Image 1: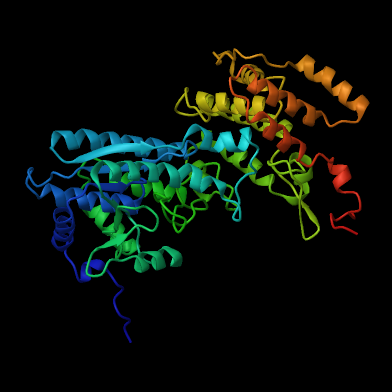
Image 2: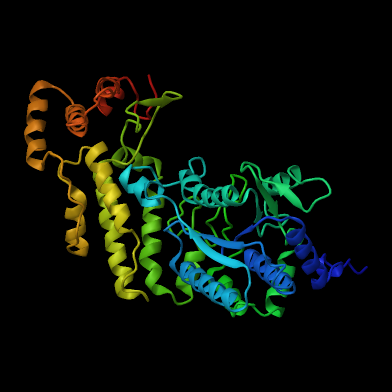
Length: 469
């Protein structure tokens, strides 16, 4: 018995049908569009279909702007960043030449929300399945800020995503739950005045590749280069524009962040290295080093016994470790700058920045104001590895390494935690000279209410496994 032919969107619909649907949505909904473009096969298919559909309209009908946005977390795999950047530049150029309504933009996290500021500055541990602190800060918020800004400017927007059925059970449920009756649009799960359109929702993976390899890229790209990229990275999927928590996680064999530790192995980066991008090996080694910090036996060595709020947390009679220690964060910064130096020497870009100047300044500020880094270690570490550069001058009175050494002696003699006194002094220094010091008492009170027991004191009464006796 011969089996039924596999499903394909093209068994029931022609490209003209799909183009007419896109045109109908565009013309009947007098709103600008925001297309989430990740550089992968699905978002490329959606964007290319929309381009060809709108190109069939008259210039006077193409009056609603179409914003093509990509998310750059600042830790994206460099090869993918280069590919996406080049594509966006071509889209912008050809759109102007052909009077198409497309405009491109790259959304990035705020400096205080970047990966390195949170990991190295605040000491957040490397992300894992139950603590993916990176997604909201680095992907959801930047994309949503752009969408909300355009919704505020135009009243409403239509967000176009390259989502397809079957990618995620949760995603399928969300798409169906918020579908507007008798409409091709869905309501966005969280963003007011934003609607969602998914033109390739019924495409199979084979449909996507069949289309991309048969239809010429309208902005002069090479879809076969994209296929090669997938083959070289062993990629089974792309890292989509993330606008809510239902979007599938990246990592594993998807295009995504080179620092991703949510999965056990980064098959995409391994694939690139195996296919000739040897210069990326230091990136993979750094990523694997981060992943190793999640091993239970290493946590007591590299993480604080208190949480960032200064409290000790014990769950099921077991101590839960907090952020990386300042000393380990210094080691991470040294290792990152060394990795940057290696990829500059071996890679295609001698000026490649794995960490930006703004991030370095923000880390320095956090260490100085929140983590009692009186040594001002960031400029010292940077100079040792990367050389001299200009730093923001702090005009306020600050403590020095010698001051901390003296304070450490006094605190030890009097049995007082060094960090407690240093934190009180830093708080007073930060509010010195302010016309209103109304908050000083509450800030001092909050410091005194932190748990200042040492880890040894906390563990008193615990057996070797960490459980209370």
